[in-house]
Image (cartoon, rainbow, N blue to C red; front, top):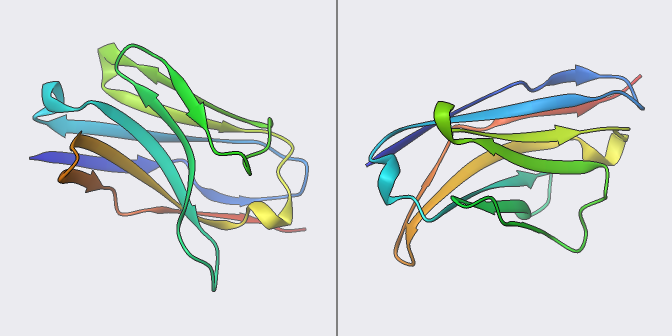
Length: 116
């Protein structure tokens, strides 16, 4: 079992920045890679970015270059740095950890609202 706890969401004005954190606990050595997803109101959940234990990253084509995924293995934490935020970035952001093709875990989600 893997537990994920996200933090760092909130209300920010357009052009602002946020850094989301996802702390993993439990059987962390089984994790193959972790990632961030987001779900905007009325839309399906979509991939934002993933990062492997070795630090290799992958971003969805739709994700702006304003977003950067990173990790701190010593803290078992993955981050999503979001800069120059826009209203269309408003969504619930979820952390995901993949152990195997048939086994993955989700955090509870953190709300990001970009509004003036």
